[in-house]
Length: 180
Image 1 (tube, helix red, strand yellow):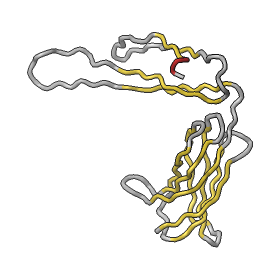
Image 2 (cartoon, helix red, strand yellow):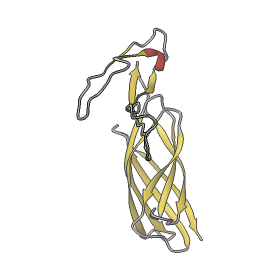
Image 3 (spheres, helix red, strand yellow):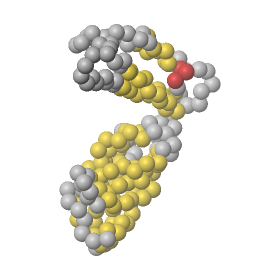
Image 4 (cartoon, one colour):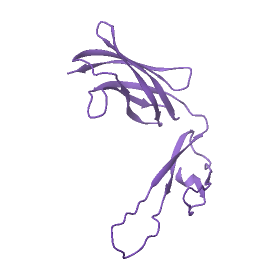
């Protein structure tokens, strides 16, 4: 999508606490297949001029910030599937998690959120987790974390997940995990 974007101005000097409006225009070429396309516009600072050859230590800092741009061309399809589950024990500052392996099978960006329920093999609830909002790009397969309030005891569990992507239909899946 980078060739579709034009940005104005390309360079500017910004005073401390200053504001600069940056405009971008998107021109989709003819014949592009329907789907979600994306790109990133990066803004990068240049170090301010400093004194040369003086005594002491100096630090120069550069910052780079990206602005993601999405565009939908034509009629996109939104669909996906949960391919499996994986348990991740707590580690460092990260809590225990059930990780959903998710595949976006459509041609559109999905913004997923939902819930996960962990049950013992007799069907009794053991834990619940919220799936925080996650973006899933077309064609992507990735893991989506669902943080648990506490670690699961060793054993085998049934996992049920329901994901909402803003469509009347929901994406659901179930599977088994083993905690050792």
